[in-house]
Image (cartoon, rainbow, N blue to C red; front, side):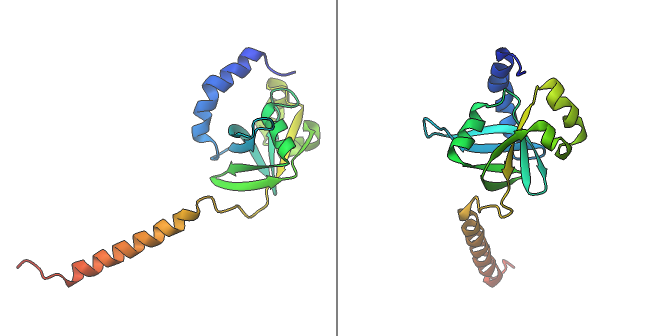
Length: 161
């Protein structure tokens, strides 16, 4: 049974903005998906658990929260886990009981009892994260060139004595 509507609103309005700062690091995943009706790119912070090459996300607010339906309609999404972005395709929803052993011990008990988790979205991580910032290597290269040029100018200058 999903939590009451006021709990979902409180999570969305209070907890989610705070969780967005932690999303993609530690046990939190940052799920980037496209709205199935609007086409707008959305980001949702979630607790995600990696086991092998898969990421497991509990469906805590009923069996089909909006973010899960968006991922299912698109058939793909991007997810940031442990500081790295992955492109995921072929999402599937499975019963929690079938993948219970892939969750850490506290969540095995808490998710079904406290959050009412009955189903889990499984996202296969492709193992090769896409380059998230292609301009980053260009900036690093330019910084090295500038520093090297600055160093040459400093070495060739006469001292003031």
